[in-house]
Image (tube, rainbow, N blue to C red; front, side, top):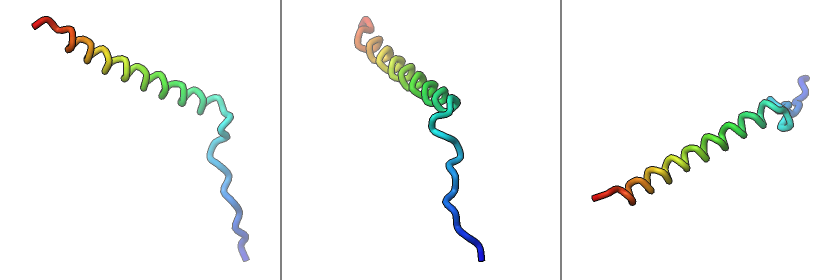
Length: 48
């Protein structure tokens, strides 16, 4: 008879690789938000 064991998580949440990926995603989101704000600011201040 087989025993059912809980699966181990694929990666430990304290691993530096995951922190680096999370940091890269945060930087990417901030860059995207900055780009959007810059586009809106440019359109609002565009000389007509």
